[in-house]
Length: 326
Image (cartoon, rainbow, N blue to C red):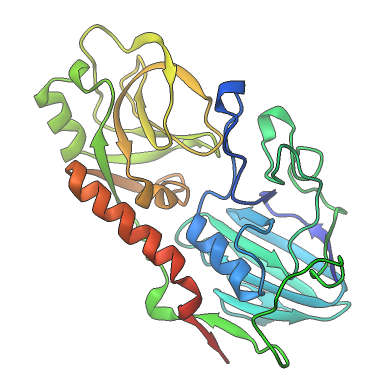
């Protein structure tokens, strides 16, 4: 068992897992970790199932006090971690003892880091998921962000009386994720796209402006979406239309012509024209962008998109082979 107390919970820390798909028709978005590769790696580093609930830390990771010792892991954007004042690396597991203080600072590149606890953060399932959806106050810790004084408990499968085979037969080593396999958290960012369901509303010259321009991430961004600033776009017939389903990674164009990238907590339907959709293989990048970052959109063919998706799923399935012991 491991028990952490949030001494300073950071800028925005929530409990997330891989989300709750299947409820779009009820108006509920999937939520879940915005950077799936980093989330999965954090769980693998402590021997958890990849879907186990973990903490998603945004911009600044805060300070955590260990009340009962156990294994934790950190993966995602670099937050200059310290354990009892000593610098520690990212993309690795750590053994915490009672009384230890884990500090995670502000992000350098990217904006989200995952803190996994051995056994998974223990919170009640809501519609099959622990993921926090802040707008509906649903999931996680009473549907809210983690606050100072909150306790985060995790127990191993054996402690819960469940059947789960540990990948280690002997004493567990400290694990790291192979440096050469860590995704690149780079600014400027490039996102591959397919033209969207309202492509016909945007003439070729307007699409050329969109794909050749560099956009800046504005201050207005959260888990729902990311507003961009740059070359203004306009659709034929206006930006408003009858509400339609919003796919993951949709890039909407509202009346002001400034694109909005929709993320995991997006509304399920919307009435703005969608000029493009971000490839599923690149969505984790959109979840790591912070204010001031620059992004460029690269159109690809449908076949290229399919290949990118297959390669991405293969990469996710092979994450365990990139773990190394210290």
